[in-house]
Image 1 (cartoon, rainbow, N blue to C red):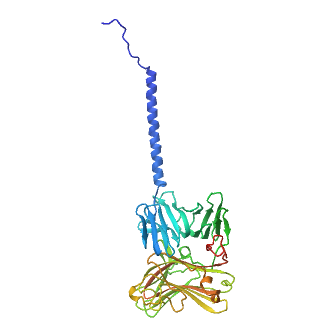
Image 2 (image 1 turned 90 degrees about the vertical axis):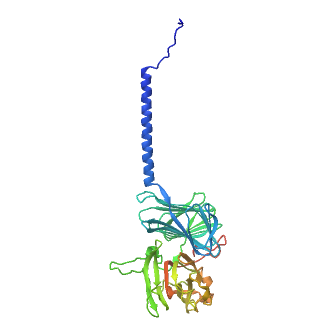
Image 3 (image 1 turned 30 degrees about the vertical axis):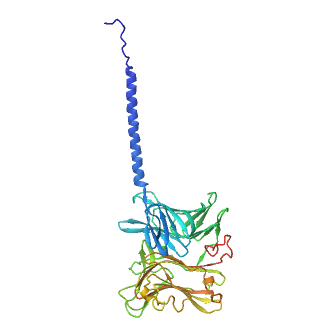
Length: 458
């Protein structure tokens, strides 16, 4: 056995071992608390703040609309398509119009959230559209549209206590923010952005975000490139209670139908059955419904009108007069507008007195069904000055007449508006009218960029 000293490894003092044990215990406890807190926060955020994609349907009201997305590349759509993949770009040509319908569903009930109508020669990207995942969530509806060029109309529905934000960014970077139920018209051209707030609240901001302008109901905003946004004189709508999605009231206490204020409706037919007018809901929107069914085979009409009295409807001082309406033709039983062009499923009728004191009428008809076997039918009625327009069936469409003072001969310019009337005619028809408006004002003679103004006073 060696006499050399054996080396015995030293052991740490007992106090050091105790400290290490406590450190491990506290570290484990801290990690446990962190996991618990993180899990609690994650679960809370998921239950109260998480979002899910909002249902979005593209409806083509007229023509063919080009839709581009990552799932299917570029394709032309002629009627309707759901857009589950975002971003998705929509582009319209000179003769096309499309509407993005934002809905949410609860126990098979449709809740209308918003609708964005892309007018002709316009382009926009749907960047995102989200909704709260659960009914008890604290989140909001969130819609973002970017790279806007051209013209859009926006309707934001009344979704109760739930908040909503729609943010629209132009191709230059200007921003329009909508946070309240209402109706808005937005136009983006090479040198300007125009916002018409018919009902609701909007904020118009410059591209550098240095300037913003709050637009209350009835105000218009104008932003010229390189300048701060300013308010402009708003459009004057000569029709009372024409935005049926907000203004129409349905049933009274006794169950009878209460029509929108200042509107009167009636039916006329060669023989039974009679037509029907009521306030109804379609795709989440409240609208005025004009309907006749029961296998009718003779002519009938369902008319709704708003008469006027002096001096309110004297329009002789204006140089801008435009009629707009948003509607949906659900069905019709005859082709086009009948053999004489007088049985349209929807006709707009304006009665007025011209500047020479002569009583005159202006018509514009719309139809969805076109049977080639009956191509000899007249494209306009005997009293009409322009052909009827074909739009797609079962989709919402927004019509704008343009400035009637440029459409009509100078000798026939209106001085006094006597009556605005919309009616359905034919054998069987089913039509929904969501809005009708008649705007008057003083239009610019020469906008800075050569484009048509959004409104008469923009």
